[in-house]
Amino acid sequence: MIQFLVNRELRTERDLDPNVTVLNYLREHLAKPGTKEGCASGDCGACTVVVGELQGDRIRYRTLNSCLTFVSSLHGKQLITVEDLKHKGQLHSVQQAMVDCHGSQCGFCTPGFVMSLFALQKNSDGYDKAQTLEALAGNLCRCTGYRPIIDAAEQACCQKQPDQFDAFEAQTVAQLQAIAPRETAELNSGDKRCLVPLTVADLADFYTANPQARLLAGGTDLALEVTQFHRELPVMIYVGHIDAMKRVEIGPDLIEIGAATALSDCYDALAREYPDFGELLHRFASLQIRNQGTLGGNIGNASPIGDAPPLLIALGAKIVLRKGNQTRTLPLDEYFLDYKVTVRQEAEFIEKILVPRARANQAFRAYKVSKRLDDDISAVCAAFNLVIEDGVVREARIAFGGMAGIPKRAAACEAALLGAAWYPGVIERACEALAQDFTPLTDFRASKEYRLLTAQNLLRKFFLELQAPEVETRVTAYV
Image (cartoon, rainbow, N blue to C red; front, side, top):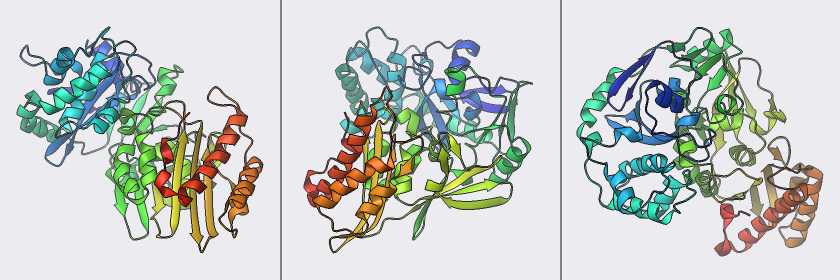
């Protein structure tokens, strides 16, 4: 049984198919058609909803793509949809702002924009253009253009008014406290089931007993098997309620990040230590995806174009794998074997990621090249981590995504740099060595020639930025 709130209405589900997405649950089970399906892949934002979670004695509001969210992940939370905003016959202030600023034409995308604006208003103390653009980057509109929607955001944030959610906050907090998970929950439709453990030990036991189960964290990749490929997932284990796997702990030498930590929750620690990592996370899909997708999931799905693994590999990160009561720690670059193939054993899972803290003499840069600046997949993702002392390269770790079937270190390029003087001639030799490291593929994102030339040019860019840091553009590079 799982329990959650739809606005303030308690919902209890026992035998619902765990493959049902929040989008379909709203439209087909609750007759709430305001939330729209545009792409079923988390790209357009038409299906955006807001989820409220307890944070102490307050509620934290976050946007999610309901097309990629399974209902089981709502356990113990509050779901808010566009139908919930109007109160006693009066539009919510964000809805009124969209009307006043002419922010809607066909209206299909409008509910998603409204929900993103609602969360933006709840999480801001005034209008900030950068924050607004980040909040809306995951919502696409074909016909209105974005200027009136941005105007609506400014009006909604500058003329913020108390609403029903403020008035009923204490009541809602009490409701969420009453349904807070206290033991393992299960959603079981007979032929399909989803387990919701609360501890790492329980997860390990369940996974050992059900090695065929699929681990559900953010679900932004896993849900595509249901929405895009129309497959059924007979057994899932949702890890989003395991507090020990959602922690970020900063030690003297390491940042320990639980594998189920949402990307948006990793941001502060990684951005403080490595500003380029933070800048890249801003361009990692959309805010809706970052609120949901996890760092462990981005590693675990073993995609060659995942943005986090090249950066983590370049930084020398390690992962802790667990199976039953046994754990092992290995460098991340040893985790990937081939396309979608890793060293992970049956019933073994990523428990945490260990990221070394920055050193004073370390030069780290990350670059993402994609067709769109925001909410797009990399054609090439590069990370450079060098230690240069007295004009000589003493240490070099260089990794790329999009250049091979796995995120991979550039061993020949590193060898060309190690022990060499830091000057343009060495950079050119290292660029030539990249052709030994990678034989990239041609696909609809880029040709193999483009990818290799881009990788070489990013190394040249890295050199120029270290020589003249005032001209840095770093991860804002895009096609």
